[in-house]
Image (tube, rainbow, N blue to C red; front, side, top):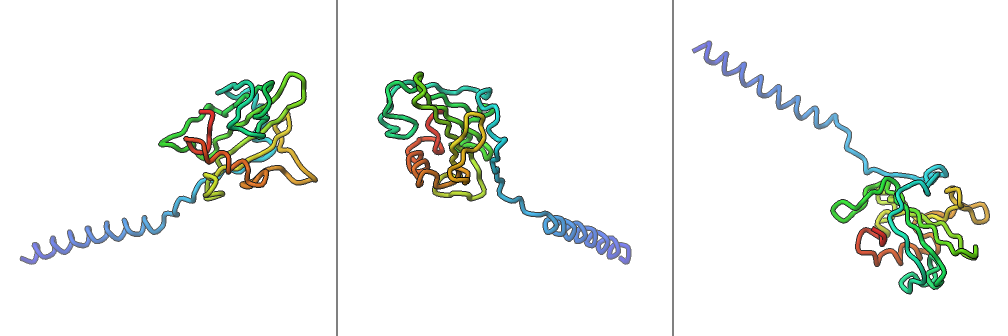
Length: 172
């Protein structure tokens, strides 16, 4: 009888020890923070070597004034780093997209970009950040201020891109 009680007590202690250790392990784990990607002046370097995912020619009434959408002579090339695609309708944090809009006469030469920043950066804008770039891929400046943000161009970028069927992206 004594042996039976001792075995039962020993087994109970072992189970309790495992349960306590399991709870302790759960408490020791840091919760995973929401991932975030913050672009800098090197982020878009060599973007013209990224996969070219679309080339569009001529006027596009859906664009209005954006990306020279009212110009029948404009070519628009869209590059996506690593050719990322949406997964379950959303692009992964860190997705980089650049659009180069240009005409042959040199009247239009515009570089715009969007980055899936994540971490609730802009919930109403799908957590995308918008950019104006220089031809070398560095972030353009206006009066010494980088041309980037959730509300770039007075919020026009995000407002227009809400019409995209896949996570604010029209091209893919």
